[in-house]
Image (cartoon, rainbow, N blue to C red):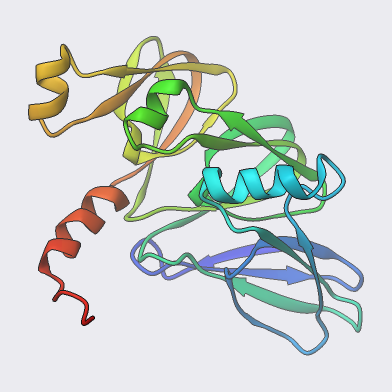
Length: 227
């Protein structure tokens, strides 16, 4: 598998070139185009590791699609392209027996050697409206993530504070705690909401735009729906 990221960072497109009989797994709805040599098989997320109810819980609470699609170059070499829903960046990570924690909406595609599981984001994330689950990607292979805006890489060594809406992915060597900005007055009136405090050493990838804040701003400008 070869991954070619084009049109970065504003309107990025991931082109995955597959050799004969190679496969790539993609988030439902992320595919843009594919060669006629590619066959597609759809399965529910979580199949084989908890069944339907666990899949529903992940789709409803984790924010990701209910379905995953497996694209296989069953009739010869070919390519599949993927793009995020919002305008922004795409990044390719080559994992070698590694683990990354990913914001659920940032996952786009991966090679079959990467396993995905949900991670609890902390009770405060639920009450703060910041999202309940994240994904853990683990193994050896290719991982493709997307962001709203550009992706910025940080090397963390010790405590670091980040707004929860700007998280894309981070190495599992980093621990994190969701907390308020100062006291409750600061949390409600500073406009910052909840933040993540990271500790340890590892790479942290952030998105330069916050989709929730963007949606709130745009939503106020939209005309009301007709009854």
